[in-house]
Image (cartoon, rainbow, N blue to C red):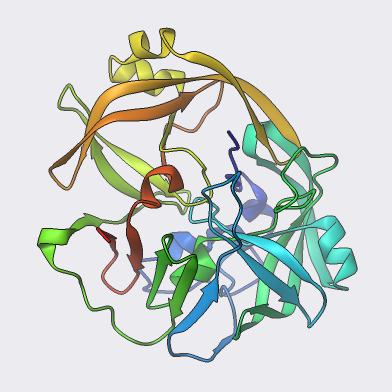
Length: 318
């Protein structure tokens, strides 16, 4: 089991003067990690583009091949749980990226805390699509036990960049991701799809409502960069009266970028999404701070679309 979520805890305080804040934008929290800098300057082409996913039997997370400044290809995780695009230091050096301004330390999955700087990518190519003028966080990971498909460090395209599109569709069954910068999304039939309103947390994460067996509803961060179905902290387990299920689970050591953590895998009776029941949900918990994540372990069974124009997550049955 591999947890591949990354997030920023405090670098925005250091970068607050680096750009002009986007005013009157209801999605402004999505760009707080770069002090309000736009996620990119330009996208080409602006119509729908299909980008192949890398096939990797070890992971459910969506991985694509990317190129920086027309350099060599490398694996990039499409991570809606990451509140900024992040490039590993070794990759940044190979790509001769421009490194700018202030530096600080951020914490990625499992407490990996290393120096991070703000960088600028002239061109980031994903298949036939090019993203131009993209600010990124350049992070040092050190040694890592990540799979060969991911390389020795974690490179992710985060929520601000993806939310700059009209909609992004993760077609897990056909191993492709469809980006559309300008076109409206045509919603699927409600008989064959779940409609989940997206809420933005104060940290700049996307979340949806999940209802548990005791009838309590919590907001879960929608994290395509997490391999499992559900992840929850010990505190959330207690609040939802689910601790007894964790006690009957099995110990699993989860591997993340440059760090590892012991935890337990277990099943809870089920959850509801959009009023529809999902029984026997696999859950991972350990000594972490994240309250609740919903990962690709569930979304891979659907044609999953983030409609950023209407802020709706669609889970469509194939």
